[in-house]
Image (cartoon, rainbow, N blue to C red; front, side):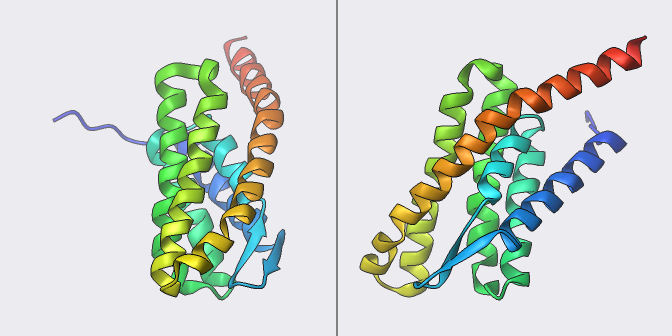
Length: 171
């Protein structure tokens, strides 16, 4: 059996990602009138998922966001958020790992679509109304769009920093 272990650097990066997603979800939010809120967490899920493994993307997106739901009084969203945001991060990380930067636009778009569609079905199930679920789609598209821009703008900065660190280690 081939056993792969996480390095200390990966564990720290995953923890940092979860913490930043938690903070950007929990403290940078605008509540809406239909039992939810707009936040900036998706941008950091997309960003961190660009530089970690699919497992890391799932943990950063899923746990970072789900724990913010619990801390913010939305504990009944823990499981849907864990799965939706976890899949968002996992998908982006997988696509980046397999194809690299050249498909970042597509990877981020697919991650955003997972979030929008996932929350549509989650809200439909939790609220028992497709109309209520439909009313949340525009806000989720806006939230995804803002997250998309955050990731597109910040990714080159993060990658440049990683390149510098690797170059310094070799010297």
